[in-house]
Length: 241
Image: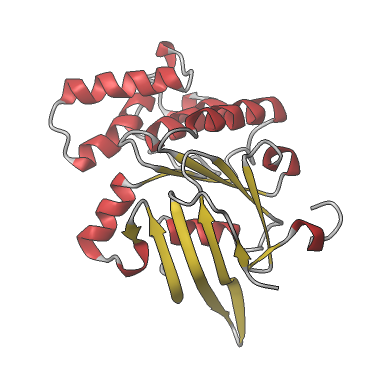
C-alpha cells in the first residue's frame, strides 16, 4: 500500500516521502520509511502506534531535533529539510513547541523561570513583560500561583507537565509536538493533560501527540496509525490497534 495518509485540509505541516534509517550493528533500522502526510491546521492530531514504530523519530524530524535521510518536511511554510545553523535554531525556537514524556524542565530554575527561558533565548528584552506573559501562560495551563516559584522537584508529575506545556507556548508556535505526554502520569492526570492539549489546538495552532494509548488517540480530530516506520490504514492494523 502507499505510505500516504491523505488529508485535504492541509496547512500546518506537510511530509513528503520522509525517510530516516539508523545503523544497529550490521542491521539497518528503518525508523521512518517513506511516509507522506498533510496535517491540517488548528487540529489535535494523534500519531498512534506501539513502542519502536517510529513515532518519536518522526516528531524529532519535524522538530529539527534530527535530520532526515531523504524526503521533505514543511512546517508553517518553512522547509525543515534544508535547515542548518542559526536558521535551524530559530525554527526550533519560533515554529515548534516541544512537550516531552520526561518533562525536560531545567531543574535549577523555578516553574516560571522555565517558562520565561524560551522568551529570553528569543531576545525579548523586557524582563517584566516576560514574567507577565509567563504568569498568564501558567494560569492558562491551570498551575496555581503558589507553584510558580517552585523548582521541578517540588512539583508533581502533572504539575511539571503543565509547566512544560506553558513553556512550549512561550513563543506562540504554530505547532506543538507532544511525545507520549501522559506516559508518566496516572490516568486522571493524563486525561487532564490531554484535555489541556486539545484546548490549545485551534485557529492557527496544531497539536500533534505521539501515543500508544488508543483511548487518547480517540479524542483526536485525526488519527494516523504507524507501524514499523510506515503509516497503515485502520483496516490493515492488527486487532487492538
